[in-house]
Image (cartoon, rainbow, N blue to C red; front, side):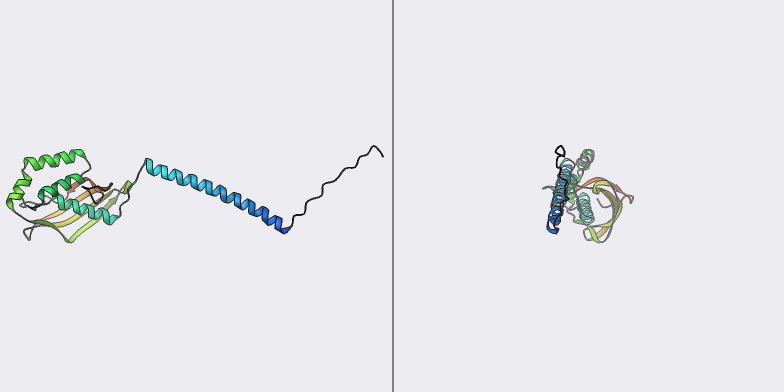
Length: 196
């Protein structure tokens, strides 16, 4: 019997209720830390994406009003402001060939000088006009159709039916609306016939 050594048997630890809650609280704390880490990584990645691929958001009403402003400038026949209006319209155009084409038209037609010499006053009558969103495209791009009348010297001079493709852009000094015009199309034939 001297050769037999005593061995101890392990006795299961009896945890008190307090110890059980401490253990659970520790697991919950570790879980919260892991979730916070995953969340901060996701937020960081989202911010990185926005910096790499910025997207500018404009509401539908901002886009519609920006399009109205372009139409006001583009079709301006106000002798007092025609030069500034045409400059603003051109600054809202997104494609360089459209800017160059419009500038060439203004020069060849002597549009600004002829309008100033005519001493006329014009505006687009938006009181009973319609502006309808035709299509929502990717990245906030909208196709919007506008129907209104040009009023020249307080008389209706022509009907306007135009579709604009509008793009949200950064606001700047020359484009305070933050809306760029990608393209436009006159739906009505000869919308301002006899207006010039």
